[in-house]
Amino acid sequence: MRKEEPPTVLKTQFMAWAGMQNALDPKQAYYLMVMALIILTALVLHLVLHQGILRWMRQKTDVVDTSWRQALARNKLLSRMALTAQGMILEVQASIWLGSGSETLALITLLSQLWVLLYGLLSGFSLLDTIEAVMQNNGFGKQAPVRGLFQSLKLAASVLAVILALSMISGKSPLLLLSGLGAMTAILLLVFKDPILGFVAGIQLSANKMLMLGDWLEMPKYGADGAVIEMNLTTVKVRNWDNTITSIPAYALISDSFKNWRGMSESGGRRLKRSIFIDASSVRFLQQTDIAQLEKSLLLKSYFDQKLPEIEIFNQSLDLSCALNGRRLTNLGTLRAYLTAFLNQHPDIHPQMTQMVRQLAPGPTGIPLEIYAFCSDTAWLHYEAVQADIFDHIFAVIAEFDLRVYQQPSGYDLRQLQQVLPPTQVTSALPAVAQPTVAQPAAGETTVSQATVSSAPAAPTTTPQAS
Image (cartoon, rainbow, N blue to C red; front, side, top):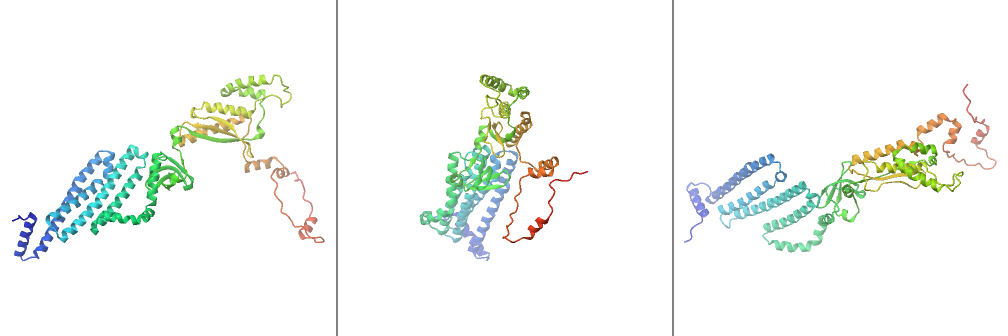
């Protein structure tokens, strides 16, 4: 004769005791006792895990400043693993205390399995988040789209978890449910279009090193001009320089063009490209007195030492009584030579990169003289300071070459002109104002305005002088 299992013996003894006590139905009383025991065990286990072990580990994490321990606490990995273990223990308890074939056992087992599946999935999410945080702190996460890859894994795990949950509830094989997904391929592709495109784009961006966290991204189509702060499965977030956030679809970075300024930062030089406009009427030949004055400049010494003998040799056999014959130095060309030497000796200009002062095509605003060089510091603040210092110096020394900077006349200029010149000359100096066109009357007709004008005395052409 087979010996009864301990739960069966306990059940028989408890039911006999309940019948002797004339209490509830022995079977109902047993199930109530088992449920109370399971709930009590779960509560005690929860208190031990969460209020004991996990609290002690959190205190150790606060004392020891370690990135991975802080990531564990922040992403609640241990807490979710403890809840997963509680669900497994609940299922084991139900299988021990409840007899096989019981509806209560089937219900508790199903709920326990769903509980374990849910918190097991969340534990996996927390593990991926912890790994991502550690990789970001170590700098590796900036070189690869870790977040997009992990989000793809989360999406795939979520789909599998939903299939397993439906399989548990319906009692059918997961393979049967998976085979039914084939008919829904078109719908699934439509629903998951952005994640699929984003996943492919993330792989291409990472493999080709097209974009990393912290890169300066400029994409006018989406109004993005700032630093990349996040790269996930579907979008790339950019913090613009005005602290606004722009979200760009990940696949747009593959299908559209964008500018990445990382090359500028890695090269160690930031381009300085700005023009100053010279008044063309101030350009002239240098006289001997001008040369004598400018030769005192240390930056122009080598220029004059080279140019003056060269021009003298060239002009030996020419008639210099005519200004059109021979070669002469100009104040604009000497300014270019001075600025070239100034850039060559400037400590904040990169010596290994292109430096030049070039003259662009003249236009209505004068002759553009462009400074083209590279600042040795790519930081924005220092770059702007260096650029401003260079042009402050140019504006200050340009008068030494008897040149003028072109600018549109302002209201102050017009007021000064009005004080110097008589009103008639001021009027003639200002741009002519178009007069309204008056329709000519037909023959034999006279308008009131014409009669008034013809009979009015002529206005004086000059202003009476004050006595």
